Length: 329
Image (cartoon, rainbow, N blue to C red; front, side, top):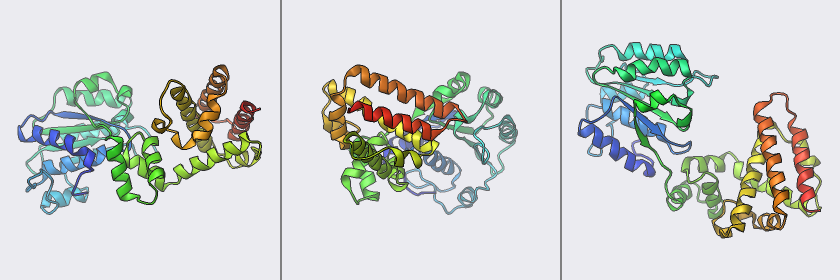
């Protein structure tokens, strides 16, 4: 467990700490967040601090007492973490029922009984309904923290019985400062990662570390070659998986959105795809009906890739590249 929070989480930490110090903690907190902001880390640190025997002046756990040792070893009898089983995407009703049973018992260590459910939107209707009874009739000294980045997918009755706290992304400047601290090689690439991640620093670092940023740059370089008649689409077609073609559609949709924003007066420097000025300017010369038709095609490609298990990604990317070439001829 980290001893310090990610800097953009300090405000939420203070909010949680005040609820604890003023003895106004609800029985259930719902943290509404986005991927790449560290809300699970925040939740775990707060839950550990709830059990710690000697938290410091900032409210953080000591990491040394017996309760902290048990927590860090994932063996604390009063702490329960519910998440989809390995290889599955759903939190099942049996998992929730087991949680309810242990939350109804007396605390083993004489303090709070705690649970972290994440992602909370992974509960299906049956498991969410099973949790409702505990939310409606909570036991004494219980705290459940639910974490979600898809609150609209959750059962409304579950959401309404929790106190909601929003975990927001930092400003672009603050996000870039954090990313630059951990990836100081190239500021322009770091800024691109931050923008693509919508100021979510941990996601930006992931994009840099897993090669996604460089794959995107290579993809647009390839498109530039196609538009100028210097390359053929066959190489891109041969190496494209379903997941990769989904990324192609997202990148192109982002590019088209930026073209529309540019034509509405937004400066190139403010656009997500500012690194692709040549393509942005070239596409802005294409007629609006042609761009809209192209956008609809991309959305249909994406729908097919997501909804069909038998789709051929090579055929989709081949059609995609043929349509791209037609823009410039």
